[in-house]
Length: 546
Image (cartoon, rainbow, N blue to C red; front, side, top):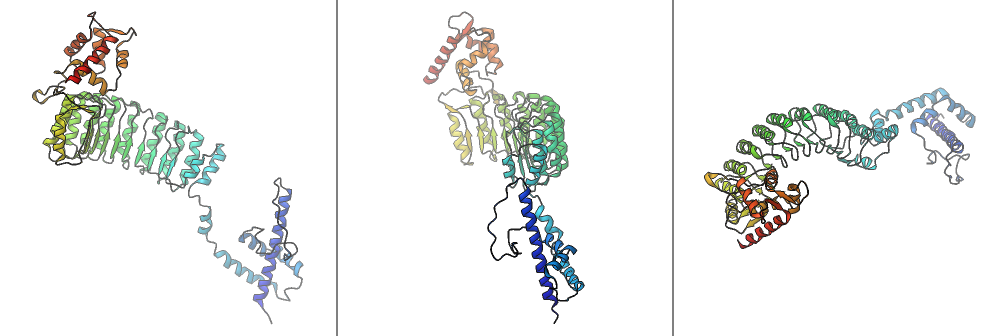
């Protein structure tokens, strides 16, 4: 009785066994002739067939596709004939071959294109990174490999070469997980950034990019700005400490005006001046995306500051503006206008911006009507007790003020301010007033004529000098070295007065003359270091008495 299914199964089993035997022999031959010492195989168990492991043995690793290609080849039929003779018992080869072809087609239908591609898809870019490193002859960075699977890739302070930057860029071109890329402090050149730019145009997963502390220059900034104009997915960008100057302002303006997704931009610790300030100010007026902007530690002076704050006045989206370590001084009126008219700003940092009492009074006038600002920082400025008093008076006049914190670090206030703070906290319990100390004296630093504060008039020049040095963290020796250009440990009246004016000591010329007269004990027309020390000691004694 004819049994086609059994015959087919028998032939398939023998062909599979024969194929595995040949593959096993080829593997052993390759291992023997290669330079690599083959792994010693265990003793072949007794149940093997002619010294070859059975079909289900794990010793020989071959794919199903290789097995099928051999099984249904003409050569395999010849091998089976030689081994089995008349094992088919007269069955027609054509019938069996037809059955084999049907089974073959059925098996391969299960292997869809998607399943084959899925096994080789480089989701994290690790294989791409290793291949790029090998091709470019650079050593792979382990931290890069380990973080390609994470959402943050941080490679800081490694001084990346152009080739290393290119390898990282190629990996990120296929990576789908990294959303925050930090390459700060790597001394990246324009060439390195040129390799990153194409990746930034294509990678739509990265949202935060930190390139601070790199030196890519004009060409690098140009490549970056063009890439971000195409990308339109970056929301956070840091270019702090990248030596940006006035000649780069056009590219900064492009970022502010045309990258609509950018919500946080850090341009601090750069060298931008008046020209850049005018361009940035105009761009700010038209920007409706940015929420946080840091321009601290640049070279902006009063004219440039006025242009920037004028643009900020018309901005309707910015929430946090950091402007510390720039020059405001006479531009305080522009700052006041921003506080009065801007309805979006929540935090304003004017730390160490050369503000004086008269500028603070202008700002406080706007605080009387502002209902949106929550944090105001004006510490490390030349502000007297009247500056602090003006802030508190403004808040007491504004029942709808949203201010939660006023930072006047390195500023001393009068003891009456304590009662005013308590009064404000009756309606605003979370209000914080940060100062450096409270004066015991009943005297105020300053003059409140006609609602204005003048540079300190009624206080002792010695007290003013001592307060100024404490507010600026100056040591007496540091101040004197600044005045004593020739190192003689003695300065003339003119040198002393001009030197104190140069560091913005808040005293009138009359007060400076009075100070010299007080210090020049031997009346030789000069102030030496010992006389300055004695004068400071006298001032401290008088302060304790008061």
